Length: 338
Image (cartoon, rainbow, N blue to C red; front, side, top):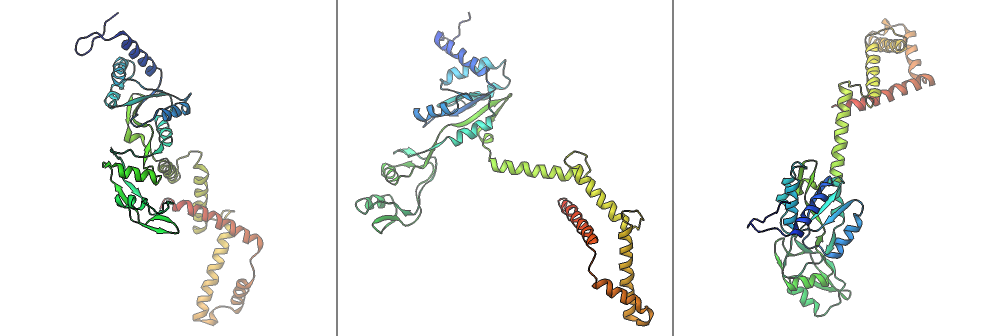
């Protein structure tokens, strides 16, 4: 058995060698290897997360040196795994799973909880106290609130903050008086939980920035992509099942309109051609009669007047409604292409 040595040439203790090998075996047996920040996470919260992910993911807290050693040994069997090593800095935790890494990150984000800020610690976020009723009765607490810069007034027996007030900016050290006031007001400005720094999946390492997705925005992008693909299929007459009914309907309407305008005497369009011809003839007669009343027989103009007053037949009405509906549907589809 080969003896492993440290960077200083010392022999690596046997228990560490065994532990590194165990980590390697675990990492090899899962498709996705996540590295998450563990700083600020309490033991209770970590246990709750373990229970929540039971059967879906394995959470392991290991020393960074052992994890890096395991990654070195995995380089031959998992392509690109070495890229994960650069994200193992500071207190981190391993999350081993076969789950989609984006889904895993969403679960972790939703599992985060609110927490108070501790005195003399750096806040990662702006801390704003909103205006409104504190629910606190007047007394010495008024001066306590005023000492940290909160404007107050007494109304209906309670203390009110008169305007939204920024008590600390991201990166500031939170003083004990500010932390005490926030605790008294029940304000928990911090969000604590596991956050993926990176995840290895299928030969690539996905960074923290790329793991964070907006579900609603992504859904809308898919909808837009689907509509654009559908419009392209109809416009370019790509005969996929989803587009075929609209392609045929559009082609039928275009052929129908062409036959009427070109006066093609097909059985389907002949009644429409005759009605169109009759309508144009009557309109022409009316124009001529306005110039020369004696040039048009009186009977023609009477026929025109009766035709305009008579209600259309129900059958024709239904046919016209059907045509209009078809035109609206095709028109609406056409409008998708500009």
